[in-house]
Image 1 (cartoon, rainbow, N blue to C red):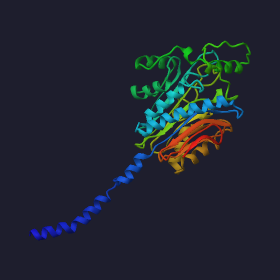
Image 2 (cartoon, helix red, strand yellow):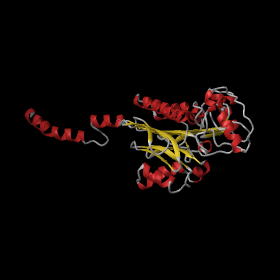
Image 3 (cartoon, helix red, strand yellow):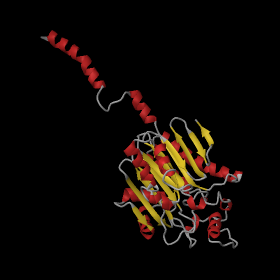
Image 4 (cartoon, rainbow, N blue to C red):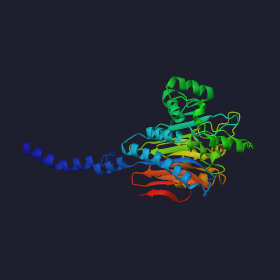
Length: 358
């Protein structure tokens, strides 16, 4: 009897091993390592008419600002950070850079005030948070994340957003913190006024010339990320539109227009003419095309940016669930950068990369 039992066991052993190797959902160690090594990040600093005659020193400062933000994102991703954390921290860097229309350096309203917007979205469960019209929050993207994680709501506006900020402990500043002379000049130019402007900030950065005639109208900052765990997230932050009136809200704080993330498809951040991005639900529409047609990210983005929007309306940056990166725009330029686990690393303003490493 013992001999028969031994023979049966030996006969069944190969079948058992084969079955174990073929169990659904299981991967070999090499496959698992490859999956864990994948990450991708794309970011933007606004789109519009960015002159190719841009002063060399100013161009360098823009490139350095994008490079600093991208380097932080890559470092975090290589160390295993989650997508949401990367999105928030990289946008905070851009919000602190007076070159970009978000946080310090935001454009001014018709009443010479600052009204800041931001949104963030988690591709794992489609949860998100957003704020619009905040005036004393140093990092609106962080307040947007608090809305996502600390309330049952998605969007808080103006006074309500400020009251919510009182409960969260986010850093507050006097509105003068956001001021730069460059943005003041843009406002007066938009209003047709040519009076002498006093420098209220007292620093050299406020003296930077404009990047282009429309850069102040279409500027935002945004980040899209795929982390090592395969999760997607996106975020967008802006000072809005120069000379805006009556509590105007653009696409940046609206999920589906300025920001979208879905683990099944992609993560997107938009920049451009906000009203058009709202009308066409640009960020969501790109995701929907991918989901319903099987198109890749770049193909879907091209269909929307170059097929739905008007020429010059702006663009998007995004990453897909497979790690594909898209930076598609129909304006003359877009401040942008991208990197992934394969070693791709680039910073661009116009068509050709300014910094590029493989």
